[in-house]
Image (cartoon, rainbow over all chains, first blue to last red; front, side, top):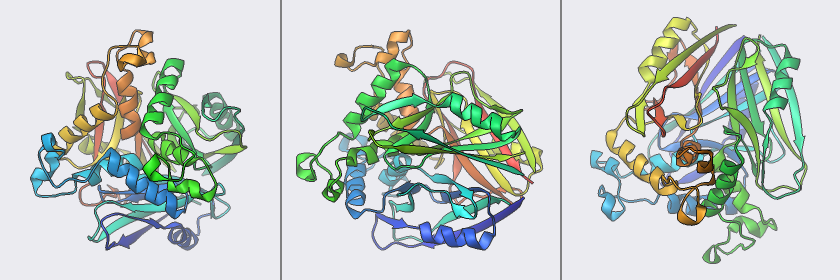
Length: 144
Length: 144
Length: 144
């Protein structure tokens, strides 16, 4: 069995952003030399997501608006005013911890014949919900 | 290490449907000859889900109503009218891309002694949110 | 390839609870002797979650309030009165089946140099949404 590990680093300028990381995962896979196995890609931070969906800017704008509706940003730490208790820690990113639960922490992708075994439209995204900080994604591939 | 790959094909008549695929995953596992390892089951399309929950029709009807509330169907591409920008691409399935994020793309199941290592009520479902098209689920098993 | 399997048992007194199980997963990993691979941790019951986020009590209270808003508890089986058809089975836990879909069934964690390969704040939680019953989490590790 072979294993391969690589970190991707991000520091987005905007608070929220979706970045297509498929090419970087493909390069990691090529570097691994693994032909058959599983590839885990996960956010190493708890206010970010890794997910698979469409590379379509309209959809990404829809996601952002939708997530803001499901878990609105608030600086407040008072739930009665739409705030979050988590913000008592001095952070203002409680909404990001919620958005990340909707979009997910990780994806596991099959590796077949040395390729990401994807359907026609599957692309891997890094979803940043509390940007402006240096953050990482982990790629771990096992197989042979 | 052994690996096994199989695709399941679906073409639902209705737009939304939940299909119990546990027996088909069990047959793939038997065909693989793998006794210990991990089994990835994922939708290969981005308007469908694979998830694990209860095989109970009332719950499935509840899920459908709930998902419709969280991410309502709309043909419109105007967010001000409850539409989605994604529908500007000519599709009317933006809601399906949202529903799939709630229910998830994939499950990873432990394989122990040649069986899906499940609790008493765990069953694997294909969740279709934009049916009437031919779509696939990928099963990838690694182990020995 | 090595594999390792362990069950964790829970019986919470309260209906809903978040329990940090990271130390127990670390002990399982040490017992496995596996240095490189993947670790699956999943709820074996369909009204519970395993997820990764912050070990911060304010955030957990936020999550509980948020999940109650997205999928409110109801004993009713009448959707017109905010109930769930699933409760016709005699259960009153339909909301728990919904909350678990938001928070997820499982996490897959990379194993590197004999450790859970985590970012600075990642911790693994068991999320109980229908407690007062004996329930299990499965740990399955594969690698070498």
